[in-house]
Length: 295
Image (cartoon, rainbow, N blue to C red; front, side, top):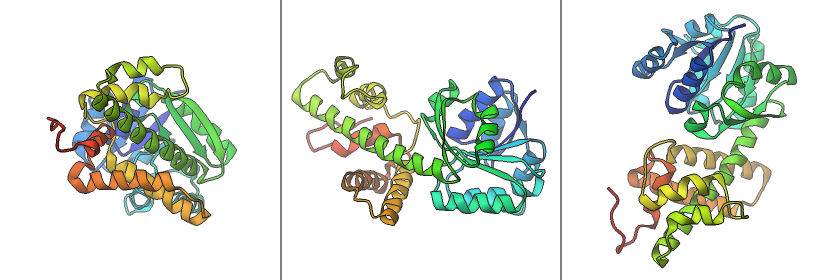
């Protein structure tokens, strides 16, 4: 049976998810305030909706790919939101990265409206979405998380039920701590290699399979070397996630000194106008008076 899916949010990440869903035979209806983004998916075989409510009315499952808990709430419970058009029992899969406590509140409000909720944030970015290789960490009732897999199997190669509502978002914050620190460590190591006269482009191969190896090392050190800043993510999104991790750490009284430093570096770059750039632009943090200016 063909899955009828509504996608609310067709930005860089939502667009990649939508593309993959269309390519794998799902019936996709899309809503986004940016009509050009919607049109890109329509050109690939999706249908456009005039509102989130209209998209939900045409679907059995709703995927959200949005930037904040506030936007998620408006998209679902606003005047023309998902809840206005969705049938009772509709499954909402929130693939946004938002606060775990906000997620718990959203799930409760959804249940009061007769809707089901799974928080399923992701790791892997747009490139992995396009190849169906995302890593997803899910929170919600066991039966709802299992049901969500009917759709999510098309975009993910690793799907884990982490616990009740909010558990997926908590796991995503932990993921972002590890990613943020790794991005910064690889950028720092790249600059050291460049300054020391080592061929940094060879380092990923030299360290492959060793304890220092990682997906970020393999993908990003070659990009750091040549200052390849093409966008597959945003520094200001990492700031949002690291802020969320620090908020969680304050609630749990967890010491996170390295995360604090990493967050400050990302905030500095955002303040310098680089918030919309990819993580590759972390190399700008290491630019000194004797370093060449990137194009």
